[in-house]
Length: 168
Image 1 (spheres, helix red, strand yellow):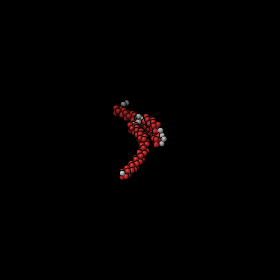
Image 2 (cartoon, rainbow, N blue to C red; image 1 turned 90 degrees about the vertical axis):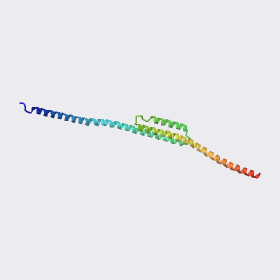
Image 3 (cartoon, rainbow, N blue to C red; image 1 turned 45 degrees about the horizontal axis):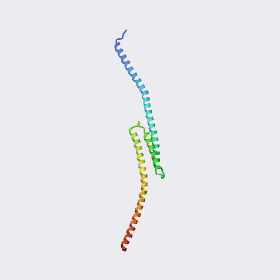
């Protein structure tokens, strides 16, 4: 015996089966993405942490090198230093520091590190120039002293000349 509404029951069953399968597929996808997305996100976050750690380590090494260069530049003020040797050591250290800048870094950071190295180079040049000028400072003082002696001798000679003309 066939029921009278057999077609309607089959349609209803197929609709139920279709919605049941669609619902189960959605649930399976939700569970899959619930477990799969955090794994990918975790991998991405780990790579970002590694990159950040590398950057932090590089910044620390860069700072230490910068401090040692600064100490070497300060040692130029000590009298009796071999300035050309010290300047060559500082220049070598600056070249080494410039080469150690990672080029894979973002443009901002590469430019920042390059600017710092360039400032240190300018600082070295200015420091050398100041040391050269400090020698000329003593020379200028010697010339001023000699000029004062010459002026005093000139005044004395003018007085002697005035006296000699007055006696005639």
